[in-house]
Length: 368
Ligand SMILES: *Cc1c(COP(=O)(O)O)cnc(C)c1O
Image (tube, rainbow, N blue to C red):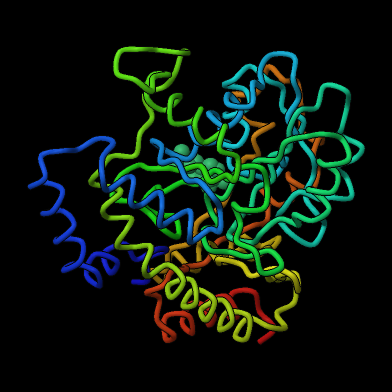
């Protein structure tokens, strides 16, 4: 059996450190908005190369609260990828703004900067690039366009903690970065968690109120906020994991390189291609094939976990039926949804397991 993601090894590797963090918080008698969150915020801001970090309840609310902090709402448009996890879109529609989807680059999963300019209207307020699968979006042309049109940029870093664009960490390049610490992400909590990174002190300040009922002074509410806080226990666990993030991402990179090598030259199999300027965090290793159903069946029979990220693009979800975007509206996103398959990936995946997965793929898709 080769699981898609080996979560148990994470705890096994870090058990002494995590158990010590648990005991420290439990014995402190203080569980929400305290010293651990403050320390994690400082450490994570430093890691990302951002001036501020605000810990929040999850990645979706991190995105949503950034839009709220920028006063984006009804009548405003936000450019989003057509190819993304639905959370990206949900954040925009939650504040009452309109999603304007843009197709991915033909060679990769992320928003195509070439297509961005055509999507900008007088109502556009922000761009929300997603670093999907851990591969950073091409931030330079996105930031140039944003600056030209006076737009805000919030990076969705949920899948790409630690990745780099031309040497800079994802989440520190846009005006804000929204991070998720869902357990399966590259740095995951043992429960839900999220954060916003930004260099803008006013935005950080507003987010500190927004996450806490719109309050900075107890029982004084300056606006209608959320209850969306990173708790002390999760912050303490994340402080432990942050120390290992770069090393774990290196291990993911080695797994990806091994897959690249073992899967080279299989006809009809598309492999991920990371641009020269990007250092991917390798959240997922995603291949493309028209024979996905056959491949999934063969992997399943061999006891290998594989998943589809994602089988239905946001515009074809029932949740967005009211937008009236029928099949055919975003053909590149639709084609990806029909052909992508994520192979097992993670910092604890062993080389012989990668060999075994690659063997099944090669045998199933023939010619080898
Ligand atoms: C996981 C994820 C989110 C949402 O994060 P949560 O913490 O689960 O709310 C947002 N965007 C993308 C691309 C994600 O993968």
